[in-house]
Image 1: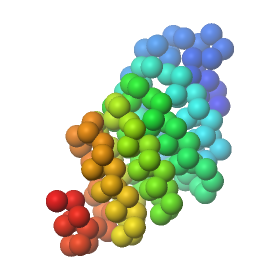
Image 2 (image 1 turned 60 degrees about the vertical axis):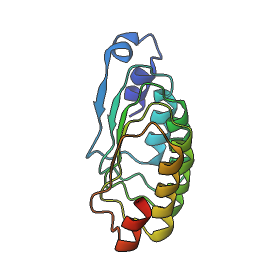
Image 3 (image 1 turned 120 degrees about the horizontal axis):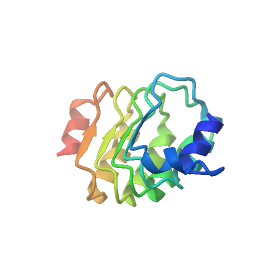
Length: 153
């Protein structure tokens, strides 16, 4: 992961890939919070990646979504982000919400297959109220109830 992150961030004179890559799908790998943190710090330096998929990676406990907040606030080219089934925890939604409030590029966000308790879902509704950029939000298999659907209206 570190070598890929270095290429994505354009370090070590590897500008070729960093300047042409638009879509990066890292789904179904074994990326943990350590690799994810390093990757996000490098991705902030990249100005070309538009679509990023991190589905079904074991992003274990740690500061992963504090880093995600930084990523959402700093990455200017990212228009699509998918974090399906990455075992989000309730406090992660606070960091996601904070990042989305200041995001200026993401227009499609897939959080499907992450269990949303009421508090977490309210965080999602909160960032939807303030974020004016996001156009598509995927919440498939997120355990949203009748009450939750009414909050979206």
